Amino acid sequence: MSFALFLFTLLVVSGSVWLLDARVLRKRRAPDAKEPWWVEYSASFFPVILIVFVLRSFLVEPFKIPSGSMIPTLLVGDFILVNKFTYGIRLPVINRKIVELNLPQRGDVMVFRFPEDTSLDYIKRVVGLPGDRIEYQNKRLTINGQAVAVRTFADYLSRERMQYSRQFIETLGAVEHPILVEDDAPSFIPSTRSFPNAGNCIYNTAGVTCTVPPGHYFMMGDNRDNSSDSRVWGFVPDENIVGKAFFIWLNLNELGRFGSFR
Image 1 (cartoon, helix red, strand yellow):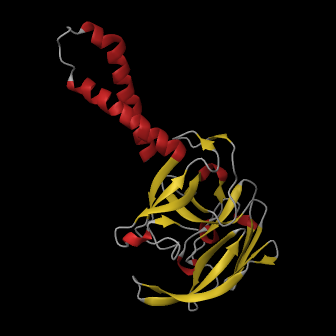
Image 2 (cartoon, rainbow, N blue to C red; image 1 turned 135 degrees about the vertical axis):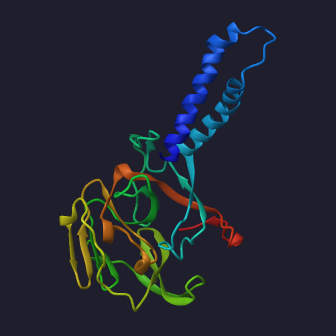
């Protein structure tokens, strides 16, 4: 059971008990009788659960970075906030969009439900929009025939792996962000899987070329040679979008990481 469904279930149960007591049970109790413990607990927790549910479903949701696919932008252990309404208002649990607001843009860091297992949330950067032709050949990114601008930056030292990776600053739309590239990693995409619209992608020894289908997005990690992303498991449909990541609020290993990111 997803946490959203679990929270919704608690909300319905506690609210139903509170309403039943207010409308029926309270009238049947003696004036000096004490509330049953299950009524007292429900009445106490219902408003708290309601506030948390509304905030988490429609405003912001916390998310913990579980892997190194977004290094150096996001590190393992970062706790971030996800804006739930940037890309439209969606009904909780079923995730159906009811109000259209903004569309994802190239360069956004987006949280989404993993297409192969929607109980899992993934986080990657939006690289391709619907209709885009994405080429990742010999570790260079091209969008609709235009090479994406990059400039060299100081090598990045991974504290976990104790090794250096080449670091570049890439410009996607209006967003400049760092990426890591490892020279000794292969250019071809290993361990590709069958996925919907796989016919839109052509793989070769230099990488992959894909045309993003309507209503879908092409996602990539900033740690390019250590990220399982759309190059491997395909496109992210709009209905899988959770929200836009925008703020690091905690990392217990590096307290100085508090703040926004790009």
